[in-house]
Image (cartoon, rainbow, N blue to C red; front, side):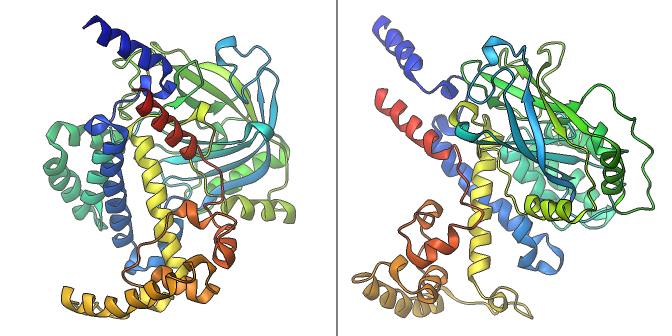
Length: 456
């Protein structure tokens, strides 16, 4: 028994640091990943069915709404008195980096800027040799869902709920049946509180990460971006202007800078500062807020041609919390689910781009196809590509043939990572310019997990 305990302590010391704080559904990262992959594909299906007219074109921007601000000339500067324990990677005293900033509506639906509701901030910090780091935060301190199962259950309950009666049925009947009465009540409470929040100026809003990230040896933290001291108070929202928040920021930046303090709260224990439950707030009375850096959007004319061009570049960025280094990897079930969802949504968008639009949006209801008919249709296609594949790898085929091989019924889509490798010929060159070309923490995480399993 003593030897076993010593072995467990030794294994924990040599394990990747994030494994000390995370708890996986099913007992292992691999088991949970299979569950999350299934939930992610369910979420993509729900979001696809929830689009106006069922048009797949809307899925091309599944996780981003139209922005109120998009700039790529912001600066992030860490404080000179940054605490020693928080000096990790690119977070060093006095270090300053360029950054892209995006402020947008958190809802996927188009609505006036002045409408109450949740807003989102995304920041991409370009730290040179220390890599790039995406920070994503919303205007409410907690998630409505504790984990991925609750998140998907909520999406299913509200899918297609356009009218007030349909929304009430989803919230009061379908959601409790899926997650239980007490959980449904907590989710409704969080959603209603966030949805009622009126925003006068995004420059005066606080944005929270909701989930935790690793901060090197300092352990888990949650971060927030809050308005820096000073600044002009927010005016009352102009409900008659559908682009009010953008116009307000345009006027504000025309006369001066906009600044946010990047702050962190450090992990204490699973009761007061849970890593796996995104619905629990880390109270400042338990985990004090520590300012670590200042994010500044400089004074500029957002109506100028250069600023409009920059906004279009930022709009094309695919912000992802996993776009970071291993020292700052996201933690918790919701963040791991978010990774699976981004990958599932990305593969779905890839298929949409590679398939003719007419095949994706039939004019009328689809004709039912029996499994036998599918098998008959797939057989010759499988045989043809199988025969060609014996002599010529799919990625060495001419571009049109390679695309047909990807979208043909039957053959499974190769891994996204394989598509981006330079040797992948014409198709790899095309996809290498797509939204998946950004680096991420997934590869180091996989290798760390494998090393941990071997050490065990």
